[in-house]
Amino acid sequence: MIGRWLLYGPPGSGKSEIGASLALALALPFVDLDEEITRQAGQSIPDIFRLEGEASFRQKERAALERALALPAGVIALGGGALLDPASRALAESQGRIICLDAPPEMLLARLKTADGSRPLLAGRSEADTLAWLVGRDAHYQTFPIRLDTSALTPDQAAWEIQVLLGTFHVSGMGASYDIIVSPGALEALGSELSQRGLNPPIGLVSDATVGRLYAGPVTADLRRAFGDVHDIRISGGERQKTLETVAALWAAFVDARLERTSTVVALGGGVVTDLAGFASATFLRGLPWVAVPTTLLGMVDASLGGKTGADLPQGKNLVGAFYPPRLVWADPRLIDSLPDAERRNGMAEVVKHGVIGDAGLFERCSHGLDALRGDWDSLVRRAMAVKIRVIQVDPYEQGQRAALNLGHTVGHALEKVTRFAIPHGEAVAIGCVVEARLAVKLGLAQADLPGRIADTLACLGLPVRLPQGISLTTLQAAMSVDKKRSGGKVTFALPVRIGEVVTGIPIDHLDQFLKEIYENDSGVARAEYEPVG
Image 1 (cartoon, rainbow, N blue to C red):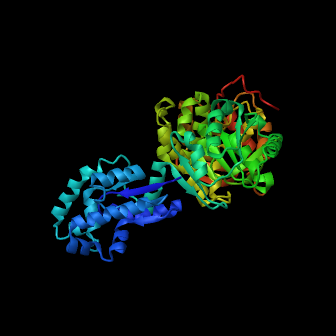
Image 2 (spheres, rainbow, N blue to C red):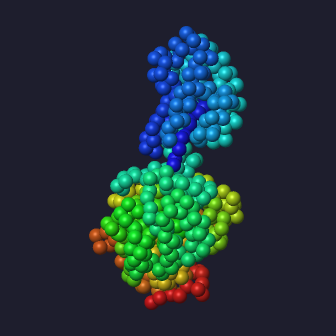
Image 3 (cartoon, rainbow, N blue to C red):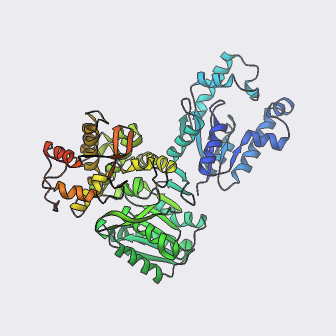
């Protein structure tokens, strides 16, 4: 479960406003500890200090904290001195996650000038004394490891940054809402998590041969401890198996496992597994609850998010599917350590794409090569996820802004198809991002240096950035013509304008001419393992 989140920090750091915004975003109860103390005591905090003294207030504060921590989940805004007492701090740290908010002392002082006199510890102090008091308290606040500077953030922005910091998001807008949680070691707690969320057996655990060999055994044992009735279902892996025949095999396996409408499907694997298991869940018995447990970098930052499920047809990728969100996305970034570098690079293409779409800082972080990213997959996954989550929150059914996530995919999906998936998805998207950036330059939408910047970042990660030699541009364009993003009979593109901004729904006249110019002006990269078609 999401559990209890405690906002702490100096007066003026925004705990109450940010706490209310965060609770709303996560669909959790909100407790303002000072308001709770006032309600219970039947008098204001200044009156408690004046009539009973600080010691009495601290006793009431400790009692209010204990009551708040009895909630199974929620956001709690603490008073600025609530954790000065070691016992209170130990209690809070054992029962929840503490996020310490902060701002420069001068800014806190400016905010406190507009306060309504409800801060008795600051009453009667001069500005100089108040500033010195804030500086003195800072050493205490510095001892909390999770910190957020709120000086340049609105309450909503701060609430969002906290979600990114802690890797916990709540997504709504597509039927039932659901949580997305990133947590190192999460795989080991899957059974307990699903049980606490009220999901039901029989459980159908879907994985492919590779992931099943690595993880299905311990995950099945964990799920059986929680639910008893668990069925290990394996499918063939790889994009070539992302077919309606595989979906039919899953339906048959669900029948054999005697899954019911209240049963749960757990998709353990990369994007192919989550797409297929999600689509099979959407259509079996008119809809089963399902949970996405992505095991690849690409699956964590892209495929498992947003409720898109489906299968490929011979004519093109993802032409059959449904918007059908999972009940939970449960991601363990420690699994990335077990991936080969080729699979990490495959996922990094989507991370770079997310940086181009909406996070210049993330893009910059990717520009130093794969080695610079090792050891901190957790924060990378959280930040890359955040870009897509913000987009799907605004446009869950891809009526507008969500189409930005297709950057690189119109060309990329066509490359996958015409090479019979010899080019992995991430590599195809990497090439697609550069080609589509060049199209943006040709249309006058982007500066001339943008394709080079994107190409340099992708290349330093070991990803290809040019159309492979020997490819038929006629066949490539024919594959694009059946892309699911057609509008008004025309293929439309999401094209980058600059790092952090993409425009969507762009049709391109003379596409054949532009592709020919791009291909002929490239040196190309011959790759024997790619078998051109056409």
